[in-house]
Structure formats: C-alpha cells, structure tokens
Image (cartoon, rainbow over the protein chains, first blue to last red):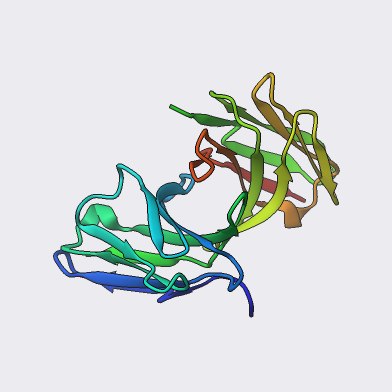
Length: 113
Length: 111
C-alpha cells in the first residue's frame, strides 16, 4: 500500500498521560500535515512540515502538543498531559509542495478517559 | 479570517433524485477541494478545482467553482445509496498551507 499510513489506529489513554502518534506519508511527498477532527466537524489544521522544517502551527496547537519530522519522511505528533478535550480523530495528510491536493491517512482515534 | 460554510449540513434524499450542495467561502481563493468521508474512515479526494469556471465530473457527481461569487457547488445526479457519506469542501487561504474545511454535508440516500 503506497498511501498515507498512521499508527496506532486507536488509542485509549487516561487523563494526564502522554501519547505519541506516527504518520508515514506518501514517499514522494515533501509536505506533511496534521489535522484534528471532532465528531460532526470538518478537519482543523494543526501544523505542517515541508521536508523536515515545521513551517506553520495553528493556534489550536497548545504547548502540550509537539510534532516532529526529523528526517523529512515520517512524522510524530505527541500530546503531553492529555485532557478529555483532546479526544478526537487525528488525521495526517501529505502532498507535493506547490500542488496542494492533500491525501489523507486513515487517522488515529484518541479517547482520553 | 477565512471561513467556509456548507449547506445543507444534513441531506436526506431518495434514490434517483438530484440535489446540489453549496460551499461558500469568505475570502479570495484560487483553489477549492471536495472530499468524501465514510463513517469512521478518512477523507477521500473527489475533485480539485483550480480556476474560475472550472467544472469537473466523476460519475454521478459534478463540481463547479465560481471564484467571483466565492461559491462552489457539488451536484448529485440520480442519487444511489452508495453515495451516502459526508462531503466536505476545503479552500486554500492566502498561504498555500492554510486549508480550511467546511463543517461537512451528511448525505443519506434512501431507497
């Protein structure tokens, strides 16, 4: 499968715990995006990378959230000290720079108890 | 701030009928995207509209873009049950990374 992959697909955690998600983009794509989607809403932009550089961060991305893309390939999104309000689907997408059709992964559904 | 509004948010239609979903956006944008999402699944790209007057068709779905009116439409022709899903439009803002999604239109096609 050459599409965007995300792991894990589901994560249940207790409030206050840290969680980390991984995204593997389509290999030729140099841009990688993270979104959050809550029930009944469209995806909300969190952050994006061009190669290994993190170029934009949304106001939604509090200091408990950090994202990395160390070698310009896969990316990780870490949430520290999770809160119940962090429960959502976290989507990763990738694209070529300059042509912004984004291809989405299956998402990681986070439930914070 | 770029805002994207879709209507209707919920649409229930009979098989064989036609209907149009509307997507309005608040600031100038050259690119508009339509995505489909099935329950519990990720988003599937349907159409990329890159210029004023662009029209694209795939099967029973046709999308158009009017950048002067800041309006895109997704027209459904002779709906079938398999089209039941949530449809999102998304617009690029002034920075090409700033993609804003509408709230989605949840379509149910009934036999």
